[in-house]
Image (cartoon, rainbow, N blue to C red; front, top):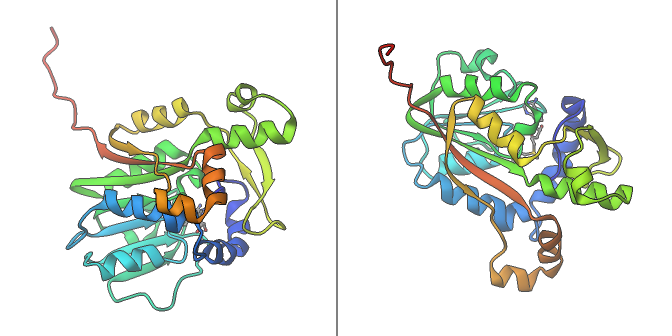
Length: 253
Ligand SMILES: C[S@@+](CC[C@H](N)C(=O)[O-])C[C@H]1O[C@@H](n2cnc3c(N)ncnc32)[C@H](O)[C@@H]1O
């Protein structure tokens, strides 16, 4: 999955259908690697309410509610949702940058908040994570995925004839054609691992777990082109994040 940012809301109006078509393919990395790993980290969702920010067509959220999740909501800028969502799934057209301002979410809180390959579209990532935290129930957590930034550096180095380090540490945005529809371009804000970790820290979140899921042996044999892709571009990172407990106030010494 590649998309990050740009005049993204406009691009995604058109791109959502292409993305969902690609995701439904038998050899889609989302299907083979990412969603199974996301599902495993979510664990048993029975009775848990879920907010999926940047939910695509809402298909993943619908699956979670069918697996027993409580009343849940998904927000996506494109607003191109499945029509077969089970009851208990609210699919809302809106901007994940300001979840606190989405009218349909006013007064609601959730046990799990998801940013699955959508966090890169937040205009102010620290603000978005802080706002999301205010909507999180006690003992709740955020599941957030991002593309390994090294992938973009490798792609850019190949494209520009430069080196990995030059591209990894470049701060310039770059625009590229989407793999899901080459007529649509997306603009990506460059980030490094330290940028990402500093955002979590500034939002006062701690990382309970991070995983970098890969194909299992059987899938790697069946889809060697996907293994070759991961060997080169690494894949995604999945973070399970929890709010830091408020610091205990100490009397001045
Ligand atoms: C790569 S897709 C991921 C979809 C889904 N979360 C998944 O894992 O399959 C990124 C999604 O983010 C949505 N998106 C992009 N910018 C957004 C924004 N500002 N607010 C809400 N959704 C946004 C797109 O419409 C798209 O559905």
